Length: 543
Image (cartoon, rainbow, N blue to C red; front, top):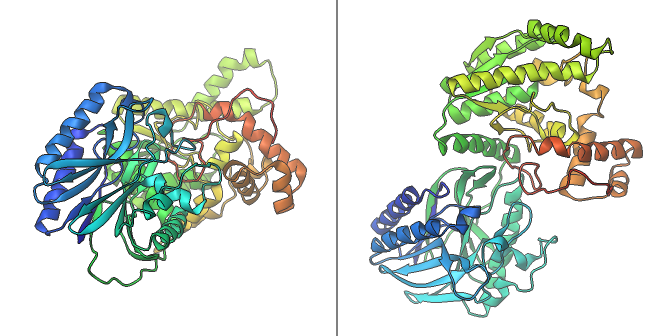
């Protein structure tokens, strides 16, 4: 039996173009004389459709395209992700795989395990179906599972407990091959976890396991593809990450075992590039404007934007004030020269002074503090937004996760933007990304990488004046935000000063109101500020 894995990039709700892609892959598969074509979860509508699922005409259009897809499935089997209306559940909808053979729908496999945690909210829309499905086709018993249905078996999902393991149930039906339709978002180092889970499941089932995962970015989520083929526990093939791809699995052929050695920082970089690229492409946007400070964060955003959008679609602005160092201004010019990107100098000090003069009677000779620092950031934000409004550019904000966690950002200042590129990237990771960018030649000037981080909003300012070094900050953030450790557990784990840890955790919760007002960002960690983390702003709990 030959099975064709079609790893595609879908736009949510773009039924006609999604169906066009699906039909094109079916035609290619027919030319290759394959038996089954496998697509990803909710392929016709794209994942996640969210509250569009509450609209009947959304569901009707999906069904219309499914009917058209059926017409091209002569002499072939297609397994495709869609939404099925049901008559048994509270929601009346199932997240399903439709099985089409020779132009006829012979049945559906409904998803059993509905993730409702982190970035997922499937129980809001779908009913679960505990029945497992194996169908006979060309003398093979073909089983189907949908994404999460694979994950319960190895008990890695410690934060959620399901009452049923679909893997155990489908094993009782003696499949020769199990197909899995997935829409599994990327996060840092997730590939290792997937391989571990899928390998154990394939070994337990004692058969071939083929996973087709969606690729592409939809809003905050990046889907890396990375579809895989396992046989009795051994990885045999893996499709490209972060791009459309296909692979033809011949179950009668012997494949060598595959060992994957990947660079997680390279994956992180590619995820961010794809996140920016699809955010623009799927909204028919082209141009971006970026405020350059001479620091490493804005330099990294510039590199990502160039690769995602092309140098001709990027405008960078250097907006120095009286506190901006000559070195930072020179560094901004140097990286733009290295990337061949247009840079405009717009000094803001005269505007800053006008504000100081205007507000002097209200400030009443109070000493310089964060008010004046924030004024500079807000002037820059106002200029960026003006350029955006007048010329149709999208502002890419440049703050990183470490700063956002602790509130080391300015509302209506450096938080201005249509997309926050590094919102889920820790400061220490930004430096690793810079090393990756410079792996072949110096693109980000070494002066930017080596200088002490500084907002340059007052004389001789350094981040370390207000914060511990970023290695400490990021260790605490990972432990508290991603691993949900308590303050006592963090102090014990790292032997950090309890005053430092308590202060950092306090800052995290105090900054919640700022994060609620931030532009959306690209989710690349297990727990991001951009989607999947929900805490009240007003609260009194300390973990």
